[in-house]
Image 1 (spheres, rainbow, N blue to C red):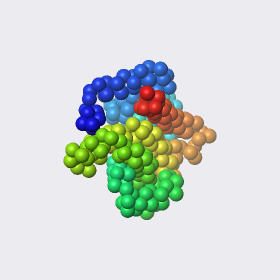
Image 2: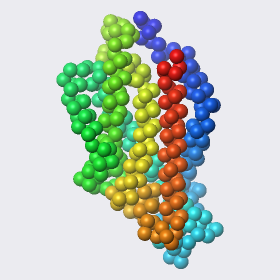
Image 3: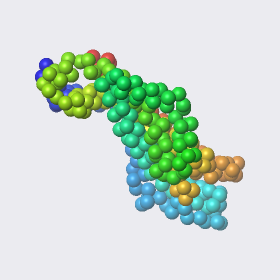
Image 4: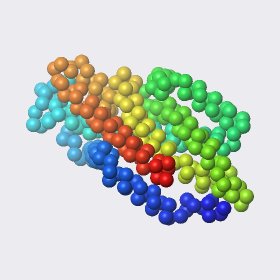
Length: 292
């Protein structure tokens, strides 16, 4: 019984999981493509101030809606370099995508594990709130919160984070309901472990595989959500380049400068597609039923 309670501390278990991740990745060409593309975008985001050819907000009035050697992806209606704006927009879009999911994961998993572990009235009240939020589409919730609290980077992060809490809470609760009935949980209680130690040390690690998959997929949804809000004028400030804002700025000139819609849209498509490929790989690699 004690061995079962401490099985997560065995390094052999970690090596087996790592080996399965690598073995699955070696066979999954889509996941390899996704990792390579996502790494390139992350590198571009990190080093955007140094590799961007121009200031993203620098206006050149004699180069409006034109392509040239100095501007390989063209310029917008204010003469701003599109490549520089996309690179800097990558930083904002990825930051919003990752930070919103981390916040939603922290709150949602906490609520889900608490509801599943304790049950009773706590489970009832938490899940009724989750059901209420589940009844509304995530994007509608984000739009409403931004409309109430205003635009801006931190308001966007808060709005999208709150919209995703229900997804993580449901996954965490479902996993907790099954894990709490395992023998090693009973052994931990017999040994006098506190509820906090059981939830953090035994339930959470065993519930992490589906939570990781949910988090990966949610990042792509968060990026799309930010792009959609920015496109509607409910995103970050106008002087902060994001992919959605770049698309919004160029929609009125799409017939004159096709690149204003193609390249930002291509960036969104590649990142979201790559993250979804990675999510599919993690789902297959972390699926215990396939590993047995």
